[in-house]
Amino acid sequence: MDQRDEQEFAEYFAARRDAVRRTAFLLCGDWHRADDLAQTAFVALHRRWRKVRDRGALDAYVRRTLVRAVIDESRRPWRRERFVDEMPDVPVAGADVSETVALRQALIPALRRVPPRQRAVLVLRFLDGLDVAATAQALGCTEGTVKSQTARGLEALRTELGDALDDLRPAS
Image (cartoon, one colour):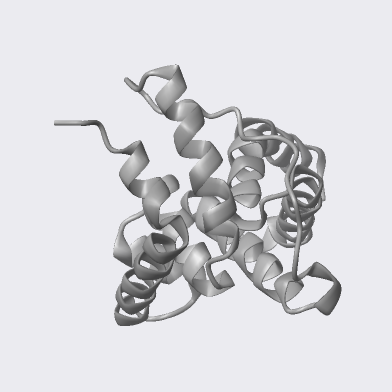
């Protein structure tokens, strides 16, 4: 890579590092693994940097690489169960801090128990804010698959949350 390419990659990396790391954490539930997965995604992007023609698609490429790495790693038997000591540092806009903490304490462990493909769809759709088409592109599947995985993932998440979901809703 020439000097200009290296500079462009460094600027992209600096701008997107934290967001990619947070997405990786939400997908895997472990900050150390999230660091490794984010690094894997950025290394893959760096290798292909000169071949990327559409710089507007960089986020989609990194997301897709990240999701594939998480799903591939989840298939390894020694990765089936993990515990988290820390919660992400991403506050929900306009929410009370205690509600945000309660939501994270219930959501993150439940999200970890949702199957990997469904978890990937839920994170990309609802936590990264992608629409159905962008999620389908990031995962390399059809929009119908995204919709069905979203429905199944939400149902699995509701099942995992159980009574905790009722406790999080404000009393009317």
